[in-house]
Each structure stands twice: as structure tokens, then as C-alpha cells.
Image (cartoon, rainbow, N blue to C red):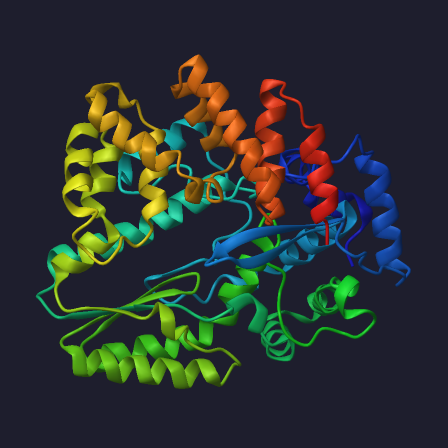
Length: 439
């Protein structure tokens, strides 16, 4: 175990601000030095035990299904971050080409680099990240690299067959025994204590529901997502190598971002065979393909339309008129967009004054539909609000308040409270609803 000074340096200022102030559940003033001293002593004395999460955010996954997102106590976030930070060199180095999700915790970006990312990846929403992420621009960078790779592959490859799929309940199904064995196998002897500490946290963080029984499967899909992201990506490294090798042997190409996977194959028969092999390999580590999310495309054009590359490119280049024309022409003609809300969020992030009144109203009608409220964060709510006239603003705030009374997913209420607080609106009813919905 490292000494206290080095331990303290790992828990850097940016991370501390994220878990204490930028969270949807901010805490009062905390003495960082005092908290870290107590945490360090408990680790060294072998008395550390994770507390139950201080809050659970219940978000709307889809189709009225809830996703439960824990918000840890500050000491437990620090412990989790410390362990992954110590191990990340060994968890992130065995990357298969064309796979993304395992970038290090320490990628930092300046404002100039942020602007460069927006220019380099016009088809990526610059707000593609969780508000609670330790390093939000890293999500933009690597999602941008992934989508750029897909786009360039579409441009270069001959017509073939494309299959896209993901893993059912991925984080919940990660087997901790397999994860631990794999981490230990790549970690040097001097870090085995940190591996034990990490596994202690992963087995006992969810005591509110597990009581004192150790958890055998599942890593937390917590508010920040970054530490669990690295573990989840590491868990798939051996699988990546096998599937990439199989794809190469059959003249196909394999891509992955987090658990989203894409295979470019010569024909449907090859794609189906590779999907079958992927399902077998995943089953060996306790995972399954989400059959409802398997999408097949017999042409590059259909796949490009599904991803809406052209709409996002035009929005990224501030060509709002052309983006609108493509969106209007396509939105009722194909079997859905890959992520329709992301298109609406990008529209409202842009200056819509170039649109005529009817065009503007079409976008705002979509943006102000109650179905969209659950996908916005406080940034998007603010942008919508600032686009409205005074009477429209009052109507919007009233609609949000009415939605809050009946919406059962409390993450919406926390986001709404953050938005209301910025403008000085009354949050007393929201506080009552948050207490009512608390798990």
C-alpha cells in the first residue's frame, strides 16, 4: 500500500469537485484532507467497509423500465477511484483494434482541444456524456473516434451485410469471480492488495439490498460511470480478441464501443454465423446478446440513415437548414433512427433562427413533447428555456412541474431541481417528491 501523500495525490482536485459539487446530489462542505486521512487509515487498519449508497437515481431506460443508478458516499467514490486508478495501466493496455471504452481516467482536455473535437467529429453531439462524468470530453473524443471509424468504413467498403447488437444487462451480469481472476492475472504482486480492496468494494457496496451477502455478479452503473467503464471494457478484452480473429478469418470487420457491437460482413450468411459465434463466446463469461436490439442492414445506405450521419454532420457544421430538410424528409419514412432523442437535443443546442417559423415550430414541438423530458439533462432544459418567449417559458415551467407530479423516475426530479436552482425557481415541491420517491 502506498503512503498517505501519494494516496492523497491520486484523489485529484478535478475528481473531488465532480463527486462533491458536479453530481446531481451535491454534498455540503467537506474537508478533503480529513476525509482522506480517515479513509486511508481504515484501509491500512483493514477496517474499511463500503457504506450503502447515499442516493439511488432511478432513470427511464425505455418502455417504462427503470435503471437504478447508485450515488456513493464520498469515501466510497474515493476508494473506487483509487483502486481503478492504481490498476488502470494493466486494465487498459490489451486493446483490440476498433474497440473503445477502456480509455484511462487521466485524459484531460483544454478548451482548444474541446473545440478541435467538435470540428473533427461533426457527427458527434458535444454533450454526449453524463453530467456526472469525471472527464466528459473523453467520452466525446472516443465516441467520435468510434463513429468516425464506422463512417469511414461505410465510405470505403463494398456493399455487404451489417449487423449491430449489444449485450443484455451488461453491467449487471459481469461475474465478479471471472473479473477478479482476470485482474489478478494481469496485475503485479505489489498491486494484489489493491485488487483485494477493489473486490471487497464490488462485493459489498450494495448492502441496502443485498444485506451482508457478498454480491457475485454485477458492477455498479453509478452516476459517474468512469471506473465501472474501465472494468467493463477489461472484462470484454479476451472476447474481443476471439471475435476479431473470427471476423478476420471470414473476411469481416468487428467494431465495439462499450457493449455496442457492429460487424461488417460480406453477406447475411457470414454475419449470421459470426453473430452465433459471438453469442457462444459471451455465454462463456455469463453474458448474452440482447435479441431485441439485434439490427440487420442489407445496404450501406440503410445503415448510414439509421445512424443519421448526414443529419449530425450538418448540425455539427451549423448547416441547420439542410439538417432540418433531411430530418423532415426521413423521420416518417424509415424504421426509426438509432437514437432519435440525440438528434432533437442537437437541434436545440444550435441557433434555430435560420429556420422559418413552421420549421422552428416543428422542432420545438418535438423538443417540448413530454416523451422527451426524461432524456434531457439540466443543460438541455436550460437551452430550451432560453429559446422561449416569456409566456412560453411560464407554460414550459408549468408543464415540467405537472410532469414531475406523475413521473415515477426520480432522476428527472433531480435534474429538474438542478435546472430550477440555476434560475432561482421554487424547489420545495420537487424536494417533497424526491423524498416520496426515494428508494
